[in-house]
Length: 234
Length: 234
Image (cartoon, rainbow over all chains, first blue to last red; front, side, top):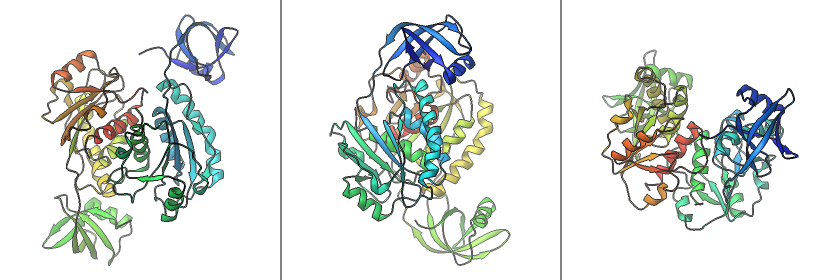
């Protein structure tokens, strides 16, 4: 199923793995002469051949540039924080694999976490996002933003939606023919939104949608929500 | 957000919680006079009032029968087993919450697990399924079947699909206007299907679909797959 992919830097026509990626390649038992793929995080992926393995780096010869298709739609996920932030640890990978472009942690009324708790987590989430792109072959990891308060959400995207447990009828199906190129979606915390919060979001242009009748646990709800939004693209 | 829901039995006009559900109610600090909902697993849910709490049972007066809507479509999920069966532990809840009717573990070429390993897990999965319906308000838990070999899959459903990593174009969107009432869907193991397996499934009438371009980890793929199939219903 293709070559192992790593994240590296290109300098003077060669590609290098250093630090974490060097360690990672050694764990994966990469040897001189092996072929590996290297993503430079600047929009390029190269097929390379390992030339030299030292304590500080792995040096690779670039064989060719690999054609990669990036999706041409952008989802920004405004995710209200659960009380247990470790639940987010578990969904970042799925969020990234489903092609979410930006992930914005949201502080809402019914979540007990504070901005500073979320800030402490961001490094970890960024690392998870970075690791996941090697597996799912995205070019860039999902961008993890600093947390915002629900009332400070601001989006100019063509589509703006909020999954709301009290919305009974409207589903994404109503918007299938809109050919949207960018969408912002707000997903609530486990306790749901207050009516005041929905009012605030509606004033900002967010349209309430239902995910379906059943009550989903948070991890399932997030993946389901993104999956439904993806239907708006092709 | 409504009353706590338990699973119980109705006898002589009263509803009873026993054994695990009795323990569970005590953990939840249910008291005499409290209102709780009781699902009898025979298609009925009752609003009740707790009359008596003993060591062996909790006895409740039935106040009224609650109207519950069951979904009128049926998804059978044929899930190829991963090498780590504990990954299934983590998805049963989501599978149940997304309204899957039957879950059939499948032994395929690229999974190292054996039928007997899967059989050992079924009790645990059934328990997880049963617990999840209290939260998501389904009437019945997802039915967990005994494992079958891929070549022995047999389905008469109106829609038969298999998510296949080498299928590039066809998505569920092509089938949106079919008004299907029951669908069987096969989701592969982590290593994917062999070409021989896809041939076998196609001969049985299963249509290969793509989930999208990115490679998803198993947990995300299963939820995404079910979510896409649900789009076929209303």
